[in-house]
Image (tube, rainbow, N blue to C red; front, top):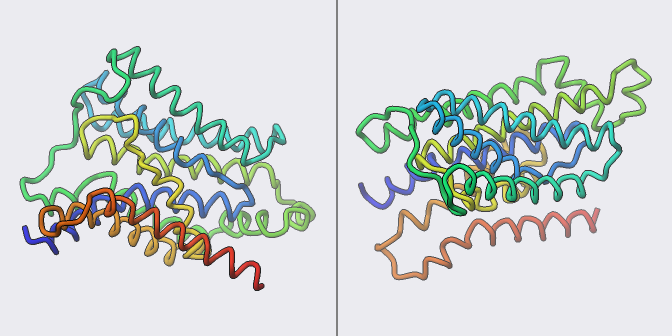
Length: 284
């Protein structure tokens, strides 16, 4: 394939975890819950996907296991913040640490390694690389999820309640809305969304690696800032991060640039976004 086509295919392939995490961040933040444990959720859902696929030999079981694990992981964050009155940032950081520690322990326990699992079962894919990417189940599920999240906030009562709880919880409570319940539902839903990205990483690479999340959970928060918590704009921003991530694969061998420089592109973009957002906040 040409460099341009390779870049396009890799962008689509890499967009899944970015978009999934960005959608999750939208749901929780519009419900008034800060969640920076998306990185940990990617790790836990990816690990559960790997364990499920390894134990059963079925990619579908692995996929389902990842969704369940991601949902429970973020629901735990919701319980800690909403019911336990824990600080959201502290809870998120603690969960991230626990996620990586759990992953290393599980790798040691199951496969006697601290880095990666053996090759795992995956979904049967077409021989064409481009067709294999666009038919990836987790990627297709993420596309559907983006549409559903957009519809959630546009046409459903739950979406209106999530927005009401996030903007004015006291006013929402006065209207008879169970604020705690809505926030718990939002955090659990965010976990299921993140898990699409975690499952995709594992099933796409046919293995679980300890560092495979690659900071995507944190970078997705920058996409939410760019999109200003709007689904469509945030998805576009997340795909933009994936495009920067894919650039190092597309131009590999075509341009004599240090690979570390290309790998840093998404992180540099995220830093610029955060700096611009902070400056705008000061001006406002």
